[in-house]
Length: 174
Image (spheres, rainbow, N blue to C red):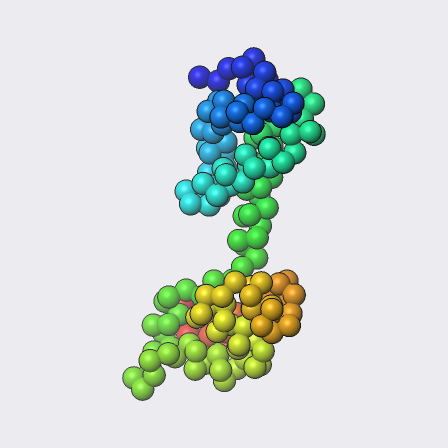
């Protein structure tokens, strides 16, 4: 059961530097925060990540808390983090496994990679290989290719969009 007085008291303690107060704050709010984030993300794994990040932000930004409604304060942080993550996820283009089935050639074990090598510029192809096949982080790929992380993300999304358009333009179903 949510106890507003107890929560306010522990938010004040946290603001004064008592890190043990975080345990009570978490206990009083984690279910509510989880469900708010889950409602936005609809993914339990992403929701767990946001839950952790929310409490880190509460701790990081405790000095901006001004004795307002602590539940609303924490919920707002969780909602903002969830919405930002959702926007980020929507900007990413995913290559679905069904695409591979459409491009299967009897002589090819890696049809999508072969297709990519034919239609993508060299840097786009290498970024695709590093990020998707080798599972390197975008930061690491940026270091290897002397690009910013956002530059890697841009080129990766461009490469995936080119692949998607090629598949669509050539009447493949996916």
